[in-house]
Amino acid sequence: MGKPETPQDESGATIVLNSRSYATLFEQIMDENELKEIGEMQGVGTITPYTYLPITYLTSNLSNPDIRTLRPLEMVLTDSVRSLAMAAGRAPAGRDEIALSVHPDRLPPHLRGIKLGDVVRFHTSDTFIGCGSLPATRSIDGREFTVTGFFEGVSEWGFEALAALAMRDPEIPVNRIAVQFPRTQDARAAYHKLADRYRKMPVYIFSSALVMDEKSATKKRQWSSFLLLVSAGATAIGSVTLVNSFLHLSLARRREIGIMRSVGASRRQILGLFLFEHLALVILSFLIGLITGVLLGGGINTLIFGRYSLVPSYGLYAMFPISWDVLAYPALVALTIGFAASMVPSIKASRIAPVEVLRHEE
Amino acid sequence: MRNRNLEHPQHSEHLIVANHISKTYDMGRQKIEALRDVSLAIRRGESLAILGPSGCGKTTLLNLLGGLDIPSQGEVLFESRNLASLRDPELSDLRRKRIGFVFQFYNLIPNRTALENVALPLFFAGKNDKDSRNAALQALERVGLSERCDHFPAELSGGEQQRVAIARAFVIKPSVILADEPTGNLDSATGKLIIDTLLEQKNRGIAIVVATHDARLAGQADRTVNMVDGRIVRIESAR
Image 1 (spheres, rainbow over the protein chains, first blue to last red):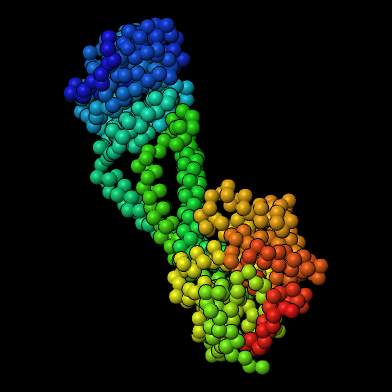
Image 2: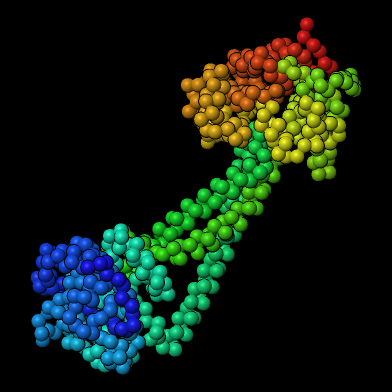
């Protein structure tokens, strides 16, 4: 069998994954050898717990006719593959955890905001069991729901999905994106490709923009404007501070400049030297700010939402789930501002007359 | 004694020629005449001592001869080129390749090692790191400081710092070294060492112009120029 191709999305299917608890599920899955055989048969190589799989492998191994496409997640962790396969074809009938694959047309009306590519985990009983070991309980409208999941964020959303289904509450948005982070280098590259395709969506988990009501949308716009204003103000203040700092740094080195000029440094060389030094400082500051921001952001996020809330627990890579877009624009702004802020101090430094500074010796 | 137009040399025979130069500093309401109608010619490979009391204009004259400053009147010709007519890149290039400066207070960059200080002119001349390092090391060897090359100025004595400054001045193989009170801040024994080090450069064909109070240094120079109140009052040749 040749290498499987990515299926098109004309089927419009939405895949919904669920399973028993991870531990329970793990006992029921096929063994590693069987996985290996299947992988080789499908032309996707050996399947390991960390292997990502082309989706055709998944679809061809699912007996549930509703599960036809797994389009948005072109690679899924093996655990989920197993979970899907188990739920779709191998789990015993009458189970109370189901892998629910729902064609948009078949979705309950209040859930039709779910788009192709959304991965939804939910259950119709009072107890939702995801595939993980981080149990959490939440009361929604007086009813207790327990969710266990890899990511509390998913679980959180699972609560809502659960409540939506269980209580048929049309107000609860369930349109979320859950991306399972791959681990290997290849999968990482593939992940970026995937992230590029879904550029408009958050990189990791959650967005309910489609279901956002007018009030929430207005509130979000107001917040966005406010934050934009704050960041513009901070940038302006930062720029002035930067000019002052560079000016101070340059003038503090008047004597050094005089010495360099006396040994033959031209104005242009002094200008270049100071511009280079200032830009190096800007780049260093940007990198420190970036790392601090990500770490601090992760920390605050953890404080608010708990462990694994927004950043899945897949090591360092998951700590820095930053796309080139997110990185490039601030870098460009920082470099532009740094360059502009450095120009005046550097020009002033280059115009220092050596005789003026060397004449006033100690 | 007022002595105008002490020399009217043929420019081609001379390295530096100052023709009727004056320098006035504008200090707000007050104008200070640091130099008044000075003419002087520096020959290739000669040693010349400029003597005179503090404030007589020695440093100003050196700055003008080296293109660090421009005269208010008159002209300074370096190898027949009027320094005032040169643009900054040309003037910097001249300083980088043909003129070495030695200052009373050494003027080394404190956060750079002796070697890096000596290599500084070569860096601005665009030499690669390896060549610069080798040349700087050789220059330090010549002043007996190769073993102190990794030391910072603060770790060196005054005499050692001045020798580093001299090494920095001649590392570029200049035509002239302009030294402003090079022994003024040193004890007698160290001063003698500095004088010897400086005059050694003369044997390599480098002209040495020294502004000094040091009678020993003046005594060893080919010529001495005496200045008073911004004027040259006497020029004497060694017997």
